Image (cartoon, rainbow, N blue to C red; front, side, top):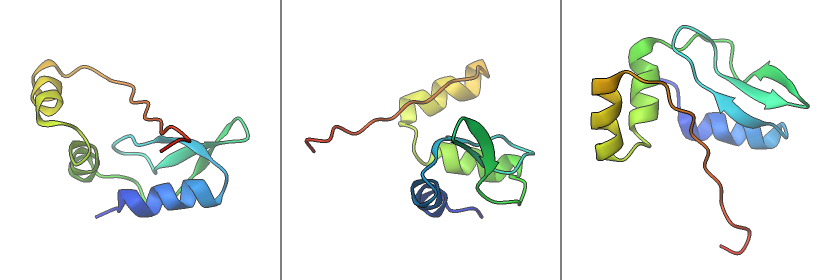
Length: 81
């Protein structure tokens, strides 16, 4: 199964941002305004679900599974932390 921590380390190492994780596609990141592959392996639906559910709070997972809506996730960390 793909490892989210390793993907994010690669994004940081390559000065990328905005990871894009879509079932059926390889994981991508935004790099210098363009999408670039993080890895060439296509993400399977179950692997994508497990990656994302692993970082979602339970209340969001429950809502996400029922409504089948698309969400954009933006996580930031304060430089002071």
